[in-house]
Length: 446
Image (cartoon, rainbow, N blue to C red; front, side, top):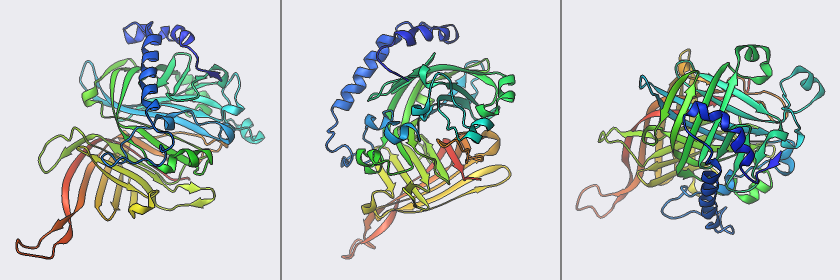
């Protein structure tokens, strides 16, 4: 693994993308350095002595912390850990206008065990010898009709990564940072069939995207420096861009899709740790419309994640971390902030044709009902192996075309009549919200 010092090698290796993306990329170094400077300035303004406990009164969970986006595989996690940066968004076919949802993920695992070639944990001979996986995997694909997931693997000797904020990671012509991602993945039918350890479909995808992270979900001290250093949780989460605008181009199996900021409905987060959670729950969207007024909610987004977090050997059943940013007003349901007295009930039902998530969350001041569906024909079973080389999630449903409703309430002081001297706290409807283009995930070990 190489430390990221300059962009010369990346610029040369990325030339191959030029003919596919239709524009010059020789200025990548200048643009990326400028972007890194902007984000670095953002990081330098953070008071590091309070970053883990800081909660701004006005914005609540919506405060950036790009330190949580750093590469985390140090210490014990270098030999028994994963770290990934996830991006999902919507584009439109440049010929037909057809809408299609995509994802791009840079997944890293066990760099301390790496070398010149990727090491696959699913190979029978490696499983027999107890050899753990070690590689960077670029996972890309699309949901909906002809849904697909494609994997490209790199040995750690070919990976270049920046060790501090703002993060930068690359290998050959695949690149990702806070402000841009680009690359190419090409898996032949023969390789997909002959290499089940790739856990990949066949297909080809190119992408070049600008990234503008607009609303964050900072979960608070649960992913703060002390607990990160202690590796307290098996799985950590930070959504630096739970609302993200993407701009650029994707070419999937010969079809070109244009991605525009105003309707990309984008999302960006990261997870890292020693193992995954089961059950695994994720829901998010910023394509939201008020059913009361019919107006598009342009400054709104929700994000829900979790399932069964583990602290050491202690499993916390039925725990979710959730945030609703409603037209600039924060509503948070976060079990790790015990003083908020958050209560959560959730279930996910799988039928022959769809998955359905039903979640009720409540604090003394707010309540949210979430009801999301996604058709199985639009989803895929997403593939990962854990740092110990075991593939426990074999039915992890993953989609980007979820739809449904959210009903949001807040506590308000009400008088029964104008002359009443005894007001009561009652639930007041904030909005009933139509949800489209929702990212969604559910799976249990099997």
